[in-house]
Image (cartoon, rainbow over all chains, first blue to last red; front, side):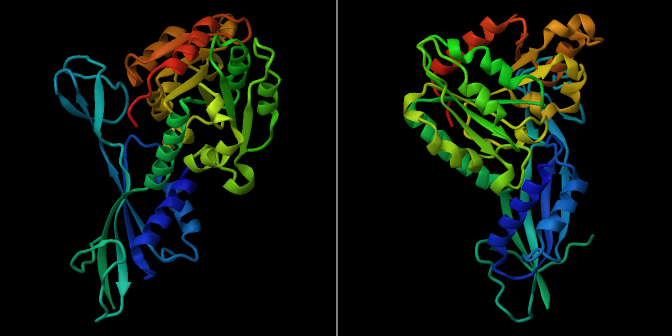
Length: 132
Length: 232
């Protein structure tokens, strides 16, 4: 159940960027090669978000497909499961170029109209509400 | 009220990785090679240490034991006699008090235990992680190399079920091979599955009970202790 540690780390990361303002949505990316169970992460996030800026936040998880690249022939392909071996030249010298992500991409914050919307530690973008 | 989107673009484990790098810097300064030893519970990690750590030629070794509860493993290691009549220094991390009963070690837990170890007097530190095939693979702790134990009683499908763990390590010890005559375990299939998940990864067939293969494991640890540190 390392999802609890990961959920705690997500909330800690968000706390540093939210400047104390209530967070509506937390957008995270999780690579397919990570062994993170989204349902468990949602459950743990709900627990650790209590009494934080994430208390009423929705955790939006994007699963990133795994893309491997062969060092021998430069072939790139998407995989769901082993073998981790190049289908073009059978080399085992392959590296994941996508699919190992585990990051907080962005957060959406509720602000009073007219208030300056500078985040303490983040880069401000135009206000938007992502359609879900 | 309106909503503002704030870019974050931070790795969830960045804080852990920063501490892992600090651990690694301390290990490098002390000239210690660090092995992160991982497996499911009961695969034989502690026994595979007990059987070889007393006889590592020219290598001063210490152990950091990680468990949710209990000090049984640390007591077993502390009872190991070295050839020079000394003992293997050992420290224990329990994740239950203070660390929420975590099912893995993280960089901060390891950092908290470093003052209990005589790093300056060691060439090799083996960190025995909490028995678990999933979570330990996600957390860097400042190690140089990751080794896992997979015992033949666990089944040949495990590389496919826990690819993150099997891909994370540089050496796989296939333990309890003395039991092969009594099991349906297909060793060839296991090795093929392992090679599909982590092509070319080094493996050793060992039995901590009969001693088969332990010379190779002992030699591997001696070589690991004397190799140049890899780039952080």
